[in-house]
Length: 243
Image 1 (spheres, rainbow, N blue to C red):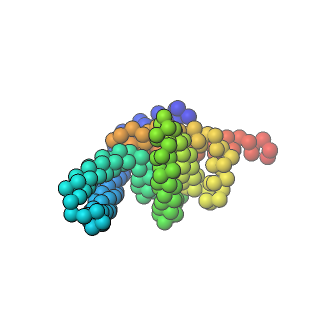
Image 2 (cartoon, rainbow, N blue to C red):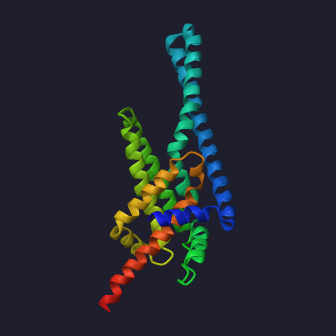
Image 3 (cartoon, rainbow, N blue to C red):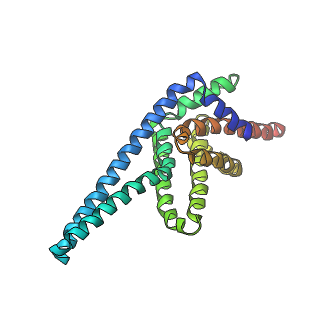
């Protein structure tokens, strides 16, 4: 497990990976900025509309106080978006990663497993579908876990464990789908759920590091290619004696 993580980290710094790294980082930054702008605009719109309603209800004498309230809400919303971007990173990177998984996996397979048959590219619509599902689930977990942040950080634990499960599941299945149909990839993941989840914990730790987490798709996919290869070899050892 740790050797797989070390191999994934070392390959991320190699020359062939840099082009993929820059593309993944660029797309992730664009998505984060667009999401942030959209949320900020929506909150300002709601605050302004609320101010107009409150002033009409309470009277013009409340105008100054309501202006101050809107100003405070706008600042709080901006800070909240910055903090929230950390929690949204798993969702963003899972979606971004779906565009580059085959390019990453192919490079890992070529360098570390040249004697093995190469995998087949996962169709882009299928990869984007899997990444989109994981992204939406991550956002849902974030919304559920946020209220629990008030309880001694219990929400952070929920979010970390859920991120490990969701990202581990997504990237392992995408790695396995290069060699198996989707149903077989899911079956393999369930059979080795402990191994996949442990690897997912490493991905969750990686994605929790600001700035570094922009490279999560490269680390996660490279790691899960190694994990899949380990699992596939274990399966082969179990089957051969039976023959």
